[in-house]
View 1 (cartoon, rainbow, N blue to C red):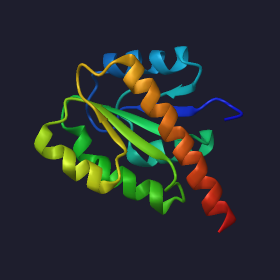
View 2 (cartoon, rainbow, N blue to C red):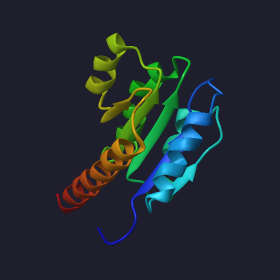
View 3 (spheres, rainbow, N blue to C red):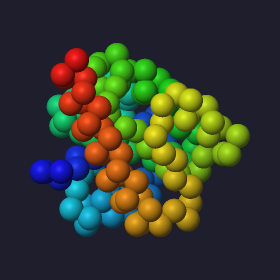
View 4 (cartoon, rainbow, N blue to C red):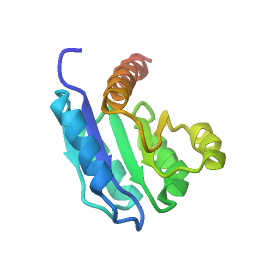
Length: 141
């Protein structure tokens, strides 16, 4: 790849439970990725701005209290800001019946409780490669 994957790990909305996001950030960091971690209670505009400033490949969102329901708004904001290549993942308590809507909105992966650290690392690594390819293709068009 040439340089480490860049991942923004964040919490949007009003959910302040950040233990899971801290653990995932450590998994990714220990796997050699560059991780930008935000405290809880981020607004979508702030996440988009930080994703742009930090030139991230993947945005990981942790949700334990229905904040995943605003992910379609995040996806739209990323695309509107020219960051349609950035892959978005979500982890936490995501009811099965709500997962298809997230995928339809463009979320690349959903991790439920019990996902292994290796599964998360491998998925993020693959999505980062996809994001970089999509960015290069968009720049050449």
